[in-house]
Amino acid sequence: MKLSPDETRVLGVLIEKAITTPDQYPLSINGLTTGCNQKTNREPVTNFSEVEVQDLVDSLTKKNLVSEVRVGSRVAKYQHRFYGSDFSAFKFNTREASVICTLFLRGPQTAGELRTRTNRLCEFEDVQHTEATLQSLVEYSGGPYVVKLEREPGRRENRYAHLFCGEAEGLDVADTEAAAPAPSSISSSSPEGEAASEQLEERIALLELIVEDLQAQINALKIQGTQE
Image 1: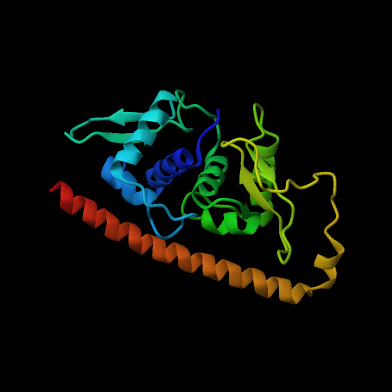
Image 2 (image 1 turned 45 degrees about the horizontal axis):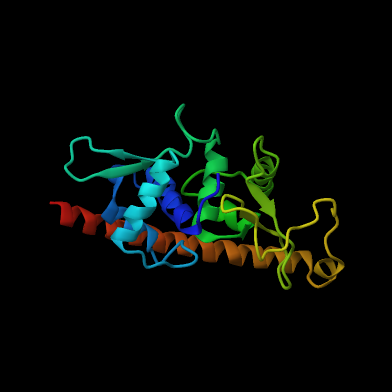
C-alpha cells in the first residue's frame, strides 16, 4: 500500500494522538489540522489548511486506514485503522507501530533518536531493543516496511526510513552485509566522547518532548474552547 508523504503525516498524527491525548481522540478536522501543523516533533513543518486535511482524510478513508466517528457529537471525528484491532490494515505491535508513527512524523532517524522520541508512545529498554524492533520491520512478512540507510558523513549511527511512500528515493540504502563500521567512525572519537555525544542528543530530544507536551496542552485547550 503506497501513501503520499502528506497522507503519512495525517496518519501519523492520528496514531500519535490516540496514545498521547486519548481524551481528545478521535480528532475533528480542526484538531487534526492543528496536530499536522505542530512546530514541534514534526519534520518538515507543514501549513495544511482544513480543506487539504479533509481531502487527505477522505483519501485515507478510501484506503481503509481511517474511519469516521460521530458518537455523541455533531462534529465528524476521525480515528485511524492502521493497527490495533481485528479490522486494522496491519498487525503491528505497539512498539512497531510507534516506530513507524515517529518515522511518519519526523522522517529518517537513528535508533537512538527513535528510542528517545517514542517514549510517549511506548517504552524501549535500550537502543539494542529499538534496533531489534527496526530489524523486525525490515524482515516483516509482507514488507519490508523500514529500510536502513547508509551512514551520513559526520554521523556515528545509521538512520532508518519507512517505505510506505515507496522506495527511499534520494536516500542511500545501507549494505546489510557490511557488518563492520567505517574505519573513520572508529578512529575519530573515543568511547567517552561517543557516550557524551549520545547523552547530549538524548537531552535535546527530551527537551523537545517537553516543549511538545506543553504545546499539545495549549492546543487541546484551544480546541476545547472552540467547541464549547
